[in-house]
Length: 376
Image (cartoon, rainbow, N blue to C red):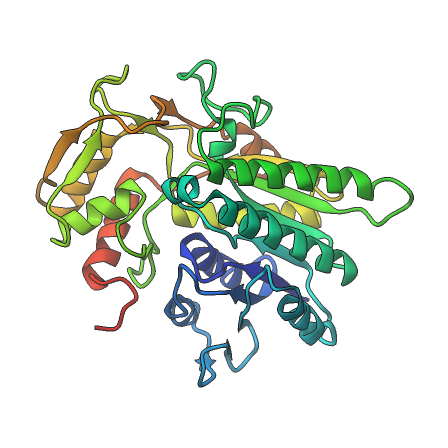
């Protein structure tokens, strides 16, 4: 049997790679309905997904507001999740075809720095989209959701060198507004889940996935991260320096208490992260996570410094990446690493791709698509 999954923000970096994992899943056959307002992404990613997954004739309509392939495995609707009537129309449209088995909710604003400048927009969009989505899911009998949260919910750990566990305190020391919206949504999901187990309501199955630092691209080089303007994340920035779009990488601080003085993060390959969402759907569906609120870290448990990442990328590229040392950025912590044990024990998921894979795949994407998804 085919399961239809609603994927919000499915044209973005992590969403689009997750579509590939869903559409190429062998244990369960999925069809996918993607909704995205394209505020920070491009429909071109869907054409690449269709190509990689061998879907026939994925076509958009003339004004780019809807599209699908000839077998209905991948559908697109240009909808803003905060727009209740527009989102309702999508639930209505697919109701006659059996509705949705589950939703994966990626849609939201995600730039840490920007969130400090326009906090009201971040609260409105990230919380509003989730609220609208949950109300409609309940109304249309779709009660499984996988939510994109973030490791930023942990804030600044008391012991910076310890790996972060799902049971650790969250919310108290978050350093930015983006992270607070993720934390608030986790609280909303928790309160909602508890309410559904009272008064004989129908129970919900929820997975909250706390991502660490996604990097890399699909191994084909046809898909990858395509940031608008100056990248907010280290690896796409390094790749743009390597390809000549930017002169050098600035390392923000080299006086941290680490072996080389630069900050350490837990990077994981975006396709491992994508596979983690499929594992979460299975865990909610027939697995032990059914009717529960489940929280998982998605990371590798291995930390790499900024210099490690720049050197690994240099190895993939075949030449050193120019870099300069700058001052520390406010809010940056020394070490941020996941303890990913729970995801392995409960969902059977663990990262299988390594640092060289991340860098080689990122470089393939950057080389084949120097301007991202722009057709130039």
